[in-house]
Length: 386
Image (cartoon, rainbow, N blue to C red):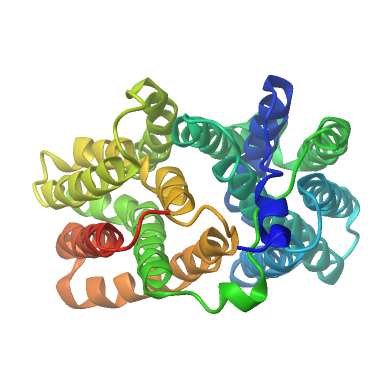
C-alpha cells in the first residue's frame, strides 16, 4: 500500500473523556430534536393554519435534509479532518433550530426543519464514524453507550415538549441552538481524520458491504416498524391508548438503556456474536408478541435485546475493513432507506393479515435482519484477515 494511503490511517482518532462527553451531548441533542416533531404536529397545524396531514410534512422535510447531510458528509470525510465535519454539522443543527424558533410562516418552518435535518444527518453519520474508526479496544461498548444517549434524548423530547408546553416550544429550539453552538469549542479539539483508501484501490461497495447495508436496512425498518405498529397492535388486544403509548415508549427506553448496558459485556466477546445473537433474540421476542398476554412485555424485551445491533454492527464492519471509512458510511443511507421503505411494506402486509398478525410481520423482518448478519459472518470468515 502506498504511503499516502497509510498516512490517513495513521491519523486515527484518540478521543479524550471531554471529547466523548461532547459527543454524548450531541447524540442526546439529536435524539431530543428528532423525537419532538410528533408531539408538536398539532401545535404546528394550529399555529400555521394547516391541516394535520400537511403538518406531518415536517417529518419529510427533516429526513430529506438528513439524507442530504449523510451524503454530503460521506464526501466531506474524504477531504476534511474530523473536527471540520462535526463543527459544520453542529453549525447546521444550531442554525436550523434557531430558524425553527423564529419561523413566521409555514414555508419558512419547512425550510428551517430541512436545515435541522441536514445537521442531524451529518451528525448521525459523523459521530458514529469518528467513534467507530477511533483507536481503542472498547469501541463497540463506547459506541453503544453514546447511541444510548440518543435513545435517552428520544425519550426526553416528548417530555420536554410537555413540560415546556406547546406554546413555549421556541424555548426547546433556542436551547437546542445554544447547546449545538456550545459544543463547537470542544469539537474543534477532536484530532485526526477518518481513514479513506485511495480511489484507485477503493472501488465500489463489495459484496460484504452490500450484505451489511441490507442488514441495516432491515434492522432500522424493524425498529421503525415496532414504533409505528406496536401501539395499534396493543390497542387491538384490549389495552387503552395511553397504556399502548406508554409501552411503546418503553420499547424506545429499553433500546436506549440496552445500549448503555452493553458496556458491561466483556471486551473479549466478538462483535459478530453480539450482533447475530441480538438480532435472533429480537426476532423471537417480536414473535412472542403474538400472545396477547406476552405482547406488552415482549415489545419492551425486543427493544432491550435489539439495542446493540446498530452501533455494534458499525464497529464490526469497521474492524473488518479498517482502512476505509467509506465501507461503514454506506450503512447510513441504507439505514435511512430502511426507515422510509420497510415500515410501508410492513403496513401493506399488516393490511392483509390484520393487526393480530403484526407481530408475525415484524418478526419476519427481524428474522431477515438475522439472516443477513449471519451471511455477513459466513462471508467475512472466508475473506483474508485485515
